[in-house]
Image 1 (cartoon, helix red, strand yellow):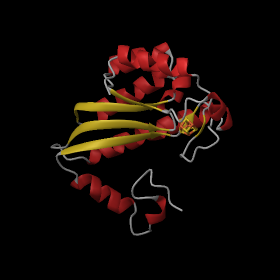
Image 2 (cartoon, rainbow, N blue to C red):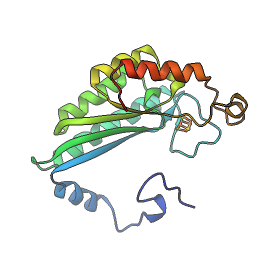
Image 3 (spheres, rainbow, N blue to C red):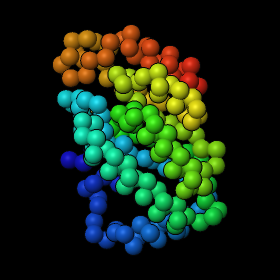
Image 4 (cartoon, rainbow, N blue to C red):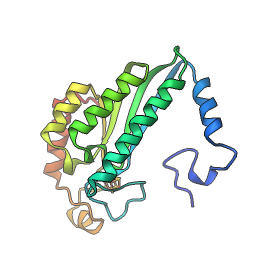
Length: 185
Ligand code: SF4
């Protein structure tokens, strides 16, 4: 069964859409566009998760993914019409805050250098369990204004049952950190 967390779903992929079609699609893009960047890593894997993600316990995989992502950003940037303006960027996963804050800053630098950003609205999915003070600084400096915290339940026995223990106080502290960093939604 396809899961409707993305469109088109993997079930719709066919050989009719390949590199040539992607290339053409990128070159034909015009006006205001939005970007989604997938960070397929998490500090821990929740037992119920169906996302495309894996644990950040292998540094090599993580850095080779970030290298490939940087190359892809450059390839995309080289194909965009000069009139294109990137107005929204969503960082999802996985949990983008499974990355080291410095790696995330480097990723945003690459986007800034390679793509025609135009005062984009920035949003990020976050795991409250790894939302450190460093992340607050990064979020404020980059200007991220929207965040999504994964909170499936506040009930401790259910959190234990689904393999995602994050006490209410931790979630509240994460929310406070985000507000102090300028996140408004
Ligand atoms: S933090 Fe989110 S993406 Fe990562 S394993 Fe848990 S549910 Fe899946």
